[in-house]
Image 1 (cartoon, helix red, strand yellow):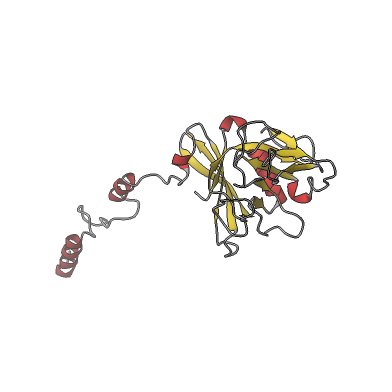
Image 2: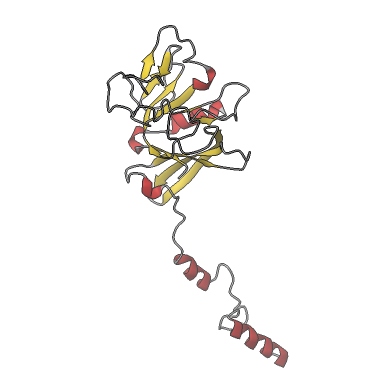
Length: 243
């Protein structure tokens, strides 16, 4: 090695850029020192992992996203699966939430709730249901009532209603928010005025990326259908909003 080379090597060694061992000792991203450093870095654990039950191995997560637009209601909905190696992102879909974003507090505030929720029941407008989860047919007469009283936030069949099977209800599910009921008097009583009828659903024709009144809208109908078919009761699935 020339005198100049020796001086350069000494300088690099002093700066910590040259590993002992002669030529080729420059630390590369895949070298032993790099591997040791990576071993000290915790695995990439999604933020929701500690908020869902240990028994949960499927999560449908919706978070804010500026990938497609910059409004407060612009979101992405993700399908996550857990196995022995941890959580894995399976697929994601463009979606939208309430026109005023996150943080639902009351009926009509046009916001979507934040937190971890069960799926009360999946639905579609045609029989049979597309997947193995508990399912109910959404008929023309189907509503989840937002009217104050004993049937607030309750699935009802109301004679004379004709919009229950509209295109945006082709596929989806009822989020178990505010003790939603599937029949009058069934289960805990919803909190009056806290909000009702929180769904995941698809879009109506020509309005794929419009904001909602508080639901989550997966704009592509086939995306919503895929999610409904993917979910499994044995996975104890959860819906995660914003986390």
